[in-house]
Image (cartoon, rainbow over all chains, first blue to last red; front, side):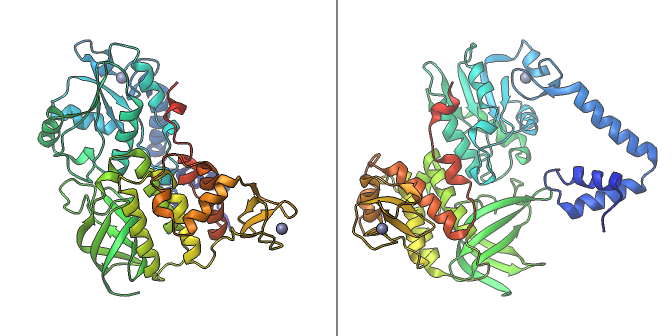
Length: 200
Length: 249
Ligand SMILES: [Zn+2]
Ligand SMILES: [Zn+2]
């Protein structure tokens, strides 16, 4: 037995979400069925609104208004010669909260993980390489201290062996195996201040 | 399913689960493959954090939880593999190895031989005297031997003739002469290399920078292990051409 097509369509769409299996997709779809029409319309509108207004920063690949730069790239008080490379947009917020960094960011939208099929071409690495044509002097590789983060840092430190460019990594002191997002601001700030050089 | 497990283990892979938990898949010495729910592991305050991540060699003290999952009572590092962790190629070699172990279909079937092999191969990847390129391929051949499926490389697997051997076909289990040829063409260099790997000369093979025929041997080993488990594997395929230049334009 299958569901009426409009319901099945929602189940199929939800099932494509990360971490949502068929069972959860059904549960959420039924829940949506039970909600007032205006609530569901608001959800649909907010999704549409997000996609039409936001996209990724043309420079750093962080979230930004469509067709432009994110507030950090657009801020000329930020040091354009230093780029902090992170895995995901929430990591930008984590580093910002630490107050220890005044340069710009680059968001890779993932870290290397061949077990999940995430190879270098799946990350925003080309965009980073392009930025090196500008006045960049230092790239800080700020990933979670786990094996995927390490592999990504090792890969990039090799790739970024460009004359005159310093590649560094936050000092140990970042919680091993933890997510950057969960790191407390002080620890993260200290780790960035005391970063060590991988290549220059 | 056993209630408590106190055993050595290697973490094969982990999955995010919910907001801050992870599920780790372990290959244990005495209990085969075991799945563990690591609660709060992604929060930096969790002291388990660094332990249950892929490629870690740990000692675990586990208790049965819901379903087929265990939860951790205690995790202790046995080996941190610092040399492996500081090289992209070595980490990828490690991934290729754990992916294959994860493909072993026998959940709950313990095989201490495989555990020992796994520990030895991770130790080799962590040994700076060894070039990591051929380690996964060598491990695949050793695993095939362990499973009683060592490929025939001394004569034609079809007609038994001594050669010349010109092809390798994982499906029929080894090398083939010109008359019976199917599968991959194989060069003399690659053939010699496979014989050395299987014949007890592995340590010196792994000391050689870019041994002739190495690329072929990697492809052959990969095909053979995929054939053996009837499963496509991602890592070797994804990382076989480890050229930084591919994304360096
Ligand atoms: Zn930006
Ligand atoms: Zn023959």
